[in-house]
Image (tube, rainbow, N blue to C red; front, side):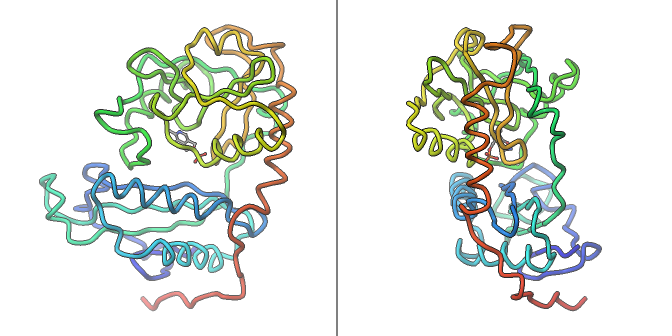
Length: 299
Ligand code: PMP
């Protein structure tokens, strides 16, 4: 496995980062999770744009342009010769001292990992999944805007622990007003009377790349789409419900907190959107040129 680390492609064993890195010490940094489908890096430009927006909000200057970041990502995929993969792109504040002052970190650390993708079992798509509502609320925007894809995932992890305890794959997270925000690592959608609805981002959700792709596909299919305010009551009484995310793609939800959603089976619109997404994923993005393999840097 070849890793991109601060401008160089190095073997995995040499891809090491300082224990003084504020990404490690404080979760001070940003990241992206991106999929490669048959040599197509899905919506790469959108992921890179989100990365730079996250970095700007936490006042961290990434030491390369977004075009250079796109090139580095494509080169790392090519160097690993993977046609289907999961990319983890991390930019941390860099090595500093033991205090939190980011001015002590002279340069951000940039890491790109291209790994095999751990696919969800097919059963998840055939049967659908159950959700529970986590007791932990999503961090309010005025404290840490959930649109920032930061390295600090403790809020989401606490929600995930509740899902694990309940024996379900995902938990729903509400905002501090008790309205639906998103899940611990996925966005949430519902369908009612052929209208597709998802919480608007001001409710406290990450602007998911898959979420936007699904909105685009739903509009293309002639469905009405509303980014709106949703309460648990709306989800419990939806005709259909589904999750979206880079790893999950589109996963039907059939039960929330013990309430059966719609018919208790993956919904018609959900399956229609999943089919459209599977067609889109290999053509919407940046193609990898596998012949352009840069030499890994010397040790
Ligand atoms: N919300 C959260 C909190 C996430 O971590 C993610 C990414 N796993 C998503 C939503 C979905 O975003 P995307 O479609 O860009 O993967």
